[in-house]
Length: 151
Image 1 (cartoon, rainbow, N blue to C red):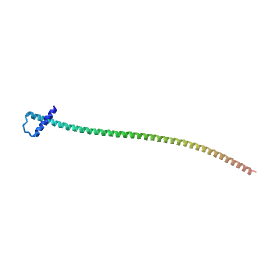
Image 2 (image 1 turned 45 degrees about the vertical axis):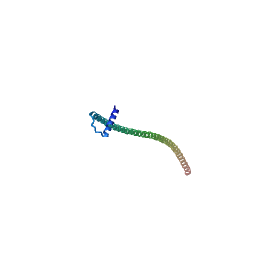
Image 3 (image 1 turned 45 degrees about the horizontal axis):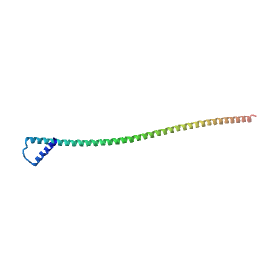
């Protein structure tokens, strides 16, 4: 049916172009008006379809841009997550190193404290021995002096 309308519409337009100035009967005028209305509607629908297609293409471009942005963000997330994991591992290693150094320092400190205690003990022992020797020497000198002075 629309094909016949198209043919009729084309025929009417062709007749109008030829310049025939015959007065159209009311039925032909109605058909011409209907054909013109149909053509106008078809053109509007074509314009609407073109607008919708452009809108669809724009939405598709936005969608692809969104996908690219999402992919970039996911890549960035993966890279930064890996970097974070590496930094955390480095931090754990440094903490272990620090703990080991602190333990070594405590051991060395205890060793030095023991050595110092031992040296103090020996020093005190030597001081007591020297004091005893000095007192004994003094007593011997006093005894020698008493013997020499008392006749």
